[in-house]
Length: 202
Image (tube, rainbow, N blue to C red; front, top):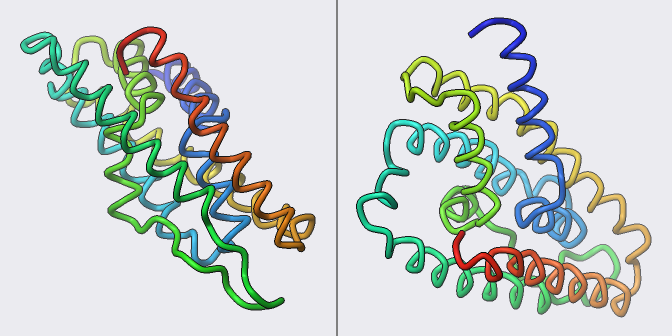
């Protein structure tokens, strides 16, 4: 991969991971509710889980949709059900009963966050777009470059959104404010499904 192409890939990867989407909304909510340290497994699950998805897609997993077109609908149904459940979980994250105590519930762990990439509509679009643009021939070397680039830039995105959520906690120092924030995050997560539902595929 030439330096110019790598620079373009890096810019593409950074823009796609740092813009608002289900992963970043959940990191924002987790940072606000649980703080930075407790969100680290969630961050790592995204930072390594999505590049792993890109790698597998580039090596041929995405061809399942060409062989079995109904897989689009199966994935869509699973995505909607799982994201609605996550939205419910965010909305009902209980505020801490006393100042200084940790809120009830727990953030996503590493495996949950990594597995979420496979039902995240934005992740599918990003992975397919990156492979199509920068590893169209599906050569293993090119696919590894794409996946490795996402590993490198994901730390910037996951850290930024989690820190933003943690800092927002200063404004959410009352249970009513934190509850309103959680419901807003849940609503935005559900709203992120609308483009997918309108298109009819993840």
